[in-house]
Image 1 (cartoon, rainbow, N blue to C red):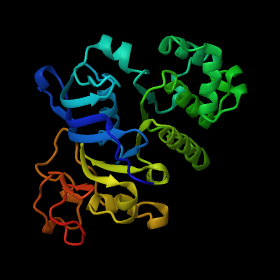
Image 2 (cartoon, helix red, strand yellow; image 1 turned 45 degrees about the vertical axis):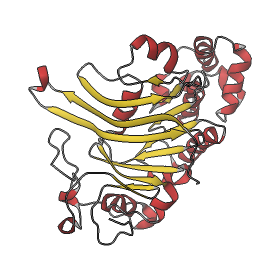
Image 3 (cartoon, one colour; image 1 turned 60 degrees about the vertical axis):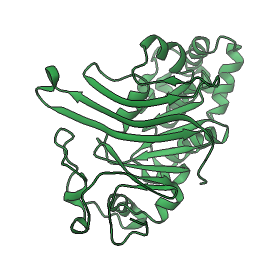
Amino acid sequence: MTTVTAPPLLDVEELSVRFLLGPQGRHGIVSAVTDISLQLSAGQVLALVGESGCGKSVLAASLLGLLPANAEVRGRALLATGDGAGIELLGAPEQLLQSRVRGRLIGLVPQSAATHLTPVLRIGAQLAEAVHELDDAAAVPAATEKLVVRAGLELDVLHRYPHELSGGTAQRVGVASALAGNPSVVLADEPTAGLDRPLVDRTVDQLAALAADGHAVLLITHDLRAARRVATDLAVMYASRIVEHGPADEIFSDPWHPYTRGLLAALPDRGFTAIPGDPPELTALPAGCAFRPRCPVRDHCTNTAELRRHGPRQLACHPAPYQRAPC
C-alpha cells in the first residue's frame, strides 16, 4: 500500500484520556490514551494496532464524544468540514456532535455489528431509517439499495432480519449503515472480531474500497494480518501510547521498535512467538518507556517514551542498537 499525503480530514494532536475512579480519582486513575497525535486523509487506511486493552477503542470513542462521565480529555482533534472552518471534536457540545458529526462527517463501524441491529426490523427498514435521519436530500429507497451495493451485499439482504445474517454479512451491513450519511471519515472499531479468515479479508477489503473511493479510514484492530492486507499506514499502540508510526509497508518489512518486532513475530508466518510478560496496568504505568520491563534490549536504551520523527516514520525507542533509524 502507498502512504497518502493529501491534506488531513482529521488532525489529532496530543490527545490524552484518563478515567477518574471515584471522586476526583481517589480510587485511582486509568491512563487510557496518552499524548496521541495522528492525521487521517482521504484515500488513507490507517491501521491502529496493539494488544487488547492498550486504549485503541477509547481513542475512537473520544473522537465521537462517547466517553463516560468520569473521563477527562485533553488535546485537540480537528475535523475538516469542507467549508474551511472545521470542528474541534474534543469537548464539542453533544448537540453539535449529534447533528453534524456522528453519521454525517464520521461514520462508525462497530465491533460485532449484529448486536447493534434491531432484531424485529428487516435490514432494509433499518438502513432506510438511517438514510432518512442522516441525509434529508436522499431518495430513500434508491439510497438504501446503493448502500447495500457499496457494502458488497446482494439486494435480497434488505428483506432479511438480523438473525438470518451470517457474521460477515452483519458486519457488512454495519459498513452500509456507517455510510448512510456519506461521511468523509470512517472509524472501524475491531470490525473483524469473531470472523473467520475469509470473512476478515472480505470485510477489510471493503474498507480499503471505501478509501479508494475517497473516504479516510481508521481501522482499529488487533489483527495484524488484516492490517497488513489493507493498511496504507500503521500506528502501533502500547500501554496507551503510540510507539511506532509510519508507512505500513515499511513497518511490516522492517519494524524498528522492539514491541513492533514482538507483535510481528507472533504472526503464524513469522514464527508464532509470543512476547514474554504482560502489559502494565493502565492505573500504574511506569515512568518512561512502558515496554521496558518486557524489552529484549532494555539495557541499551534511554528509557523515554518520546515519539521522534525519522523521515516518514516516528519511533519511541532511543536508541535500539539493531534498528536502522538514526537516533
